Each structure stands twice: as C-alpha cells, then as structure tokens.
Amino acid sequence: MEAGKAISPTGTNDEQVLFGEISEHTVGVLKTLINNIYKPMLDKMNPEEWKMCEVDQQKEFKQTFDKFAKELIEAQESFKSNIVLDPLDDNLKNKLRDGMIKDIGTIIDFSTIFGKWQDKIKAYIDDANLERT
Image 1: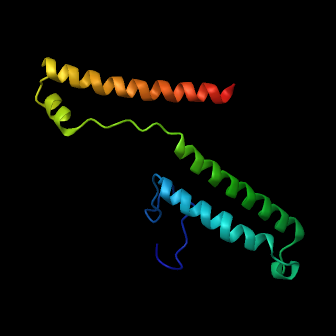
Image 2: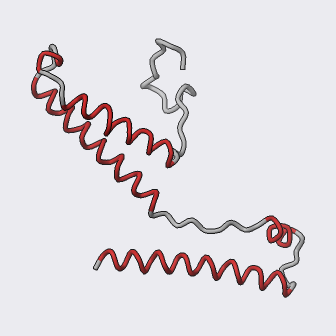
C-alpha cells in the first residue's frame, strides 16, 4: 500500500490489502513481540506518558491489548494440536493418475498409508478425550 493512502471503507476490496493464512511461525513471532516486548512496556507506562488519553480509554486499550495477547498464546497452542498426516508420495499420485487403482501393489500401498492416517486420527481423538476427563 502506498504511504499515506487510506483504505477505502466503501468497498469490500480495493485491491490494496492482501490477506490469507497466517503461518504458525508468524503467530509465534507476533506472540513473542506482543507478550515479551510491547505488553511489558505498556504495563510500565506512567500516567504522563498517556498524555491526553482519558483514563477510560487507557483502561479499554489495556483490556483489549491483554485479550489480544492472550488470544495469540491460544492461537499458537492451537497449531500444536493440529493433526499432520503424511502426504501421498509422488509414486502413489502417479499410480492414481495412470489408473493403476486395481493393481494389488497400489492397493497395499494405499492401505498402508490410510492405516497410518487412521492411527494418527484415532490417537488424536483418544488424547482429546483424555484431556476432557
């Protein structure tokens, strides 16, 4: 975005702001910056540093900031609980593309990877159920 150019509030997309998924690394870096650098600075600010900001506005800002800092911690934790399944290797993808779905070797290969996926999903569900009890 060009410096000094405002975002248009009238349109849904002025093609100046890009968005998408935020990676675990990005969330981790943001969490570290907010919780280890900015939050301690904010907590140590003296009343004169707030200048003309009213007490109610200070309080609201701090509460919102604290909520955001906590949500970043929770967001990073949620990345840790995602299931990561092994991807299909190129050999299996090629067999699918080439129509070798009735080949006994292909069936065994798919059975093996599906079994691994099933085991990971079951372990995840079992762990989640243990945490609830």
